[in-house]
Image 1 (cartoon, each protein chain N blue to C red):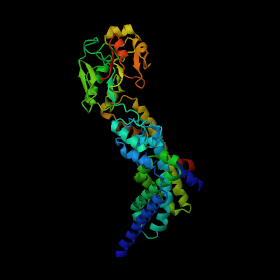
Image 2 (cartoon, rainbow over the protein chains, first blue to last red; image 1 turned 120 degrees about the horizontal axis):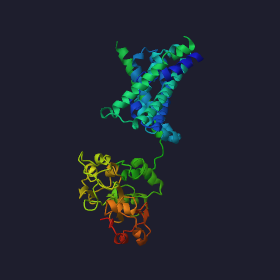
Image 3 (cartoon, rainbow over the protein chains, first blue to last red; image 1 turned 90 degrees about the horizontal axis):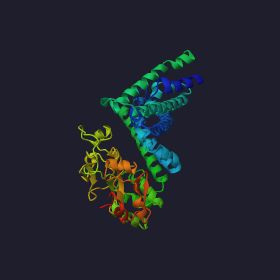
Image 4 (cartoon, each protein chain N blue to C red; image 1 turned 90 degrees about the vertical axis):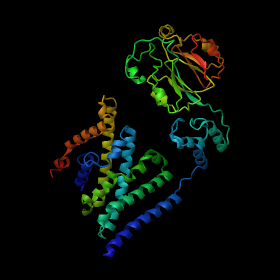
Length: 203
Length: 264
């Protein structure tokens, strides 16, 4: 079980990083990675929502959709549930945990329909975690790893973009083009982690 | 056959209705107490979210106003009418609104400023500035290609005799020209009420005289003449504290190079 958890963590962080290898959540990755503090804010908010979404969608899928043979409805049901959940969390945070609400700020409603959040909830079942006895735990670990991996990618890329600011970039590449090229190079560097978990456990 | 359509419909709409009900109940039960004062203030503000007040948009300024102890006059787009409205809502004295406008801190026109090089090229200040800091002998002063005039949406800036001049009847204080000027010599100042120094050269007096006859030489006469202690010479350049200046014009009368004037 420990081995499984570590494998999931390593996969989420390095080998199957949501942004850099699955290409989910590219819009916030490009959009809010200009400065480190906004990148961290977005990353934390995404991690938070990913875990919450998994907490809620996992029982809905295994207890409601799967027994009724309606697993093909997962996408639309998950979007519905995640959107409602984020709204609810926002109301609760605004009332009771004002500092956290202000810290997450605009990012919380922004990620209501983030593809990375929907992606993690669906990948939990594509990875067949529900077939294990500890499936719920694995799913939560997976969403945690996915969120932290997203946060890490955002922070790394914020640093890269900080360097880009001072570079003399050819006019045709200024702005978005050079950002996408550097994103591609960062994602290529993560290819080097391929086979990390398998190598550690010899599996 | 029909059940395979109806059951999913019931389940999905059931989840939708359930979340809708939970959200509605939560928004009523857990509603954050709204500050009515803040709401009223927010309604009155123009909603431009320009940030000129120094707060994070109109919402931020409204929150600060409702808390109190904030000047009512920080909203530049709102103008003088707004402060009266705000004063009525908040039930306090408004204080004087000082209409702000852009001011070009340079008076070195063709007659007074010497020419360092004959610039032939792309006719923007930004481009000219990269060629030995522009054609004028003074490295601080206005280049005169009118980047500020081009960016102004209100047609309030004209380049007259190689120096940008702001028409304060048209200027609304949007600050776009301030961001555009490569020399950073445009500032926001209270118009019609204060003295302003039309020079940005912080070299010593003799060096200023070499390049421009309209530049501030740092002689301190204005500083001595000012009854309000509103004008000080810093780095051989007179600087007006607009909060203290009462616009009496004594500094302008005493200036030997006539680079100070009461704004009109």
